[in-house]
Image (cartoon, rainbow, N blue to C red; front, side, top):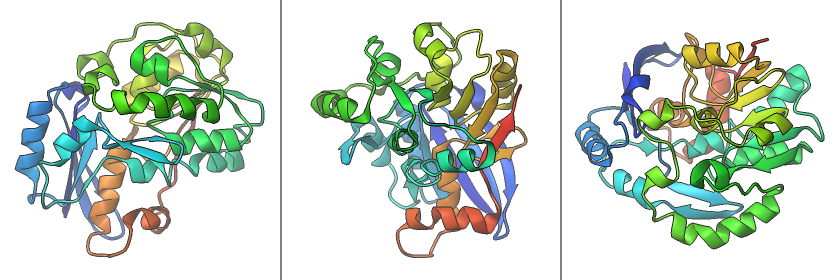
Length: 299
């Protein structure tokens, strides 16, 4: 059995342990939230290094991406420096492969996203591949990075305009404490309705669930959700709010869709000693295992 651990800056209330059976081997998967405590997260990474098959980093990235440019994120790199032996991933490989292909998968199965549909995407910096696929599909984007990460009511309406602004701001933003950019700890559980007019305009809500949930309106009637890291309770909440479809890159494991960092850590564990660039093999690995994205009709 291989052991995979995700250490997250998110709330420990979302912790879980599960066993996943693949055609190759069984995996014991564990998520540990530190409530935004970087010191605790660093200690956990150090203690698990060399003791497990793969590690995932949740709640923070090592890299932020604006177009073809990548910017190192200070908080993520500080945590990564604690790991010397075990493969460590932050989900970027999954976001740039499995999630990038998610739009075409959904269209083939159920016919959306369609050209000219309005999509509110919570963070392009976090999920550039998904955003690029949506724009290529002809969707009209409302890009929410400034709103969801910085609390500034400044939407962008194209990747080109957003990338220009991001390249100017990222040299400063990448050095800020991660709590300025992403909801950590108990903030992940709080819902404070803001930007409702953008939620209302959008037919599709896309991006990290913690960002989307942070300002989720009471009424999601008829809206489709493309997201990640949802628990059975989250799914029930989306259904009660009237959401129509739920799509995630992760399959459903007893009602839970795993985060990108957890999925990538599982892939890294299964591909151990295979050689070659791991990300090139993710899509093939999913096919070999028989995993498909989750696509669930809620209402």
